[in-house]
Figure 1 (cartoon, rainbow, N blue to C red):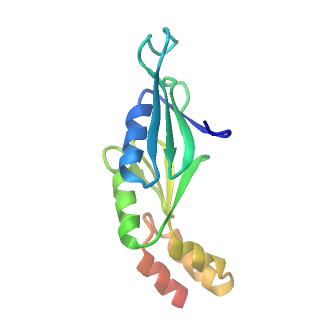
Figure 2 (figure 1 turned 60 degrees about the vertical axis):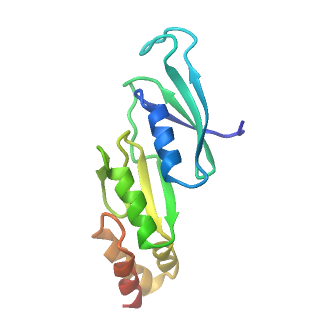
Length: 157
């Protein structure tokens, strides 16, 4: 077991979410599903209580804790992508079936978890600083899903 694990609170979809992430991202796997040994405030004995999984190598635990707490953009997974195909694939999968598009490469999955789908081209252009970063930043601010071709055009000026 990892010494440091991200705990994600779900209403009741921790196992479904973990299996979805494992189907989408490399180096992502469900490592354990644990059932409640007794009744609890928002569930009954035998229901899935926690799920151990990794997201691209990051240790996580999903907790089916009920509707008391909701996710926010204060926490997000940032996924670095290498090209537009990979960016599109992750984005489309995450916003499908009740997910939500946002701005500047951010979106939410159907469980309310926030994701930053970030092409390497964007971070490299921003790291150049100066006028290049200014142009790229201005282009990014008008985007939902990041368009690498538009980022590269802004980078070139």
